[in-house]
Image (cartoon, rainbow, N blue to C red; front, top):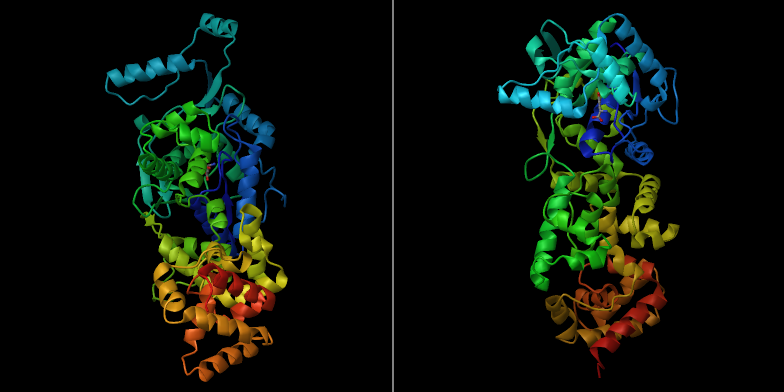
Length: 549
Ligand code: GLU
């Protein structure tokens, strides 16, 4: 197998989306499978939209997911720089070469003039394609006088261009479908198209995997490469990931969900279309809230703030959302690998769900990437995460929890090492995520101040002498050594002495200490709480429900 050089080339204009993460994963897996290299390149030539913060966020999220690149930011490499903004001299040299060879030329239209050309084409029911326009010496002098800066455009190929996609097959565009594309913008920066061709060439990339939205760009790239006498790497364009409700899985879904929850909240409050309560609760200015509620803006920050107020669960879209929601990178990698890739080979080998990273590296085959959209299935991901919660070594789970706690608040941050070990032992079989674990184990951190739910409370505690049995249990526990065996035999002894099932003593006790009828084994639960805390909780419960005499 020839070692592949693959790259993930995000534009740092936002956070790393789950679709981008899947693309990066497939690039990495192919490099590992073939014994090649995986490159991370930050495509930050769009100066208006790129931010350092977004670039740092992408690096952070890639690391969290464990998608370690062989060349790129932080690790360097022989074919850098890996930030395009640091490579302007090289792009300008290439653009200079294209100008000199006559493949490229300067174009001087303002955006208003381009709009007018576009409208004129539309009026004739033609698709607008920019073609080289003749300028006289006087035109040029006037443009300069006005202070215009030209862009540089590439002459479109005069023959049909065919892209052979390894997933989608051949796609041909005729010359009349091709434009004289801009390769250097008026701000002096190259366009994405120019930079991507130069970098894939300079970095020796052998296979480009990217989202299907770039398929038609590849014809442009082919035109640039041809003018330079280069070949493009092979390419494969990955289909979209659809949200569970259908349609593109996008940040907009967050705004949609937050908006719906705000409308429900407004109904409950009876505030109609007066959104001032959102401003009061979130601090976002009224006009911004207004635009958001009128669907004219989809700001994620506002959506998240609204969800905090309304208690809405926003859909998970970005990698950071999943990290905050307590998912494990191991499970994300496994889930994303299978979301869009057929694990089973021609013989049916590999038809299973659990695929640890190393096994993916050994088996990944680009030709089995699916060419139709996949639907994101949160239940399946949660199930898979639960499987990894069960099987990862303690030390890894601990490390993952630390990473989770770096990006979110959780009661689990209050647990010391010993407590964490105990919690993992009790909950790793029954929690799907760290957030789920935190919610199931919350009672260890804060004494219950209410006990329920009402039906269970009545059944186990308030009726049939539950409170009396709880008082007996308290007295017996006060003289018991707090080990799992000690507690078990204490409860067994009580059951025997009163000729009752153990549950008749354990269940009131469980409700008293945990606030509800579900917890891990009562012996382990009490041990972790400790004797003083257990007795104090029983006392608080007894005091709350009144004297038992
Ligand atoms: N920078 C492009 C983007 O983030 C990716 C381009 C590519 O992979 O060629 O959409």
